[in-house]
Image (cartoon, rainbow, N blue to C red; front, side, top):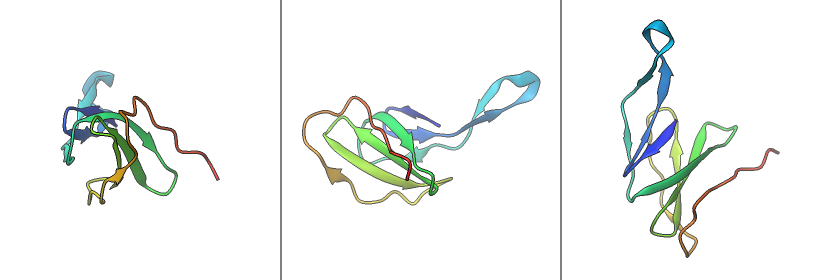
Length: 79
């Protein structure tokens, strides 16, 4: 998974070992970073100062949680 503007995009091995992008999940804002939780949820940090849960593989996108500032990265701890 990677962020691309206002989307979260899955990647998978394609032909000849080249990564292939899948169908993007549209986000409510501009994505800065993504962290994958072990429960099938991706947490996306957005430029507007929110984090958004996305249920994988294709949504739904949850309600943004306002954090403030502009989070450049995000980490989900194990446990």
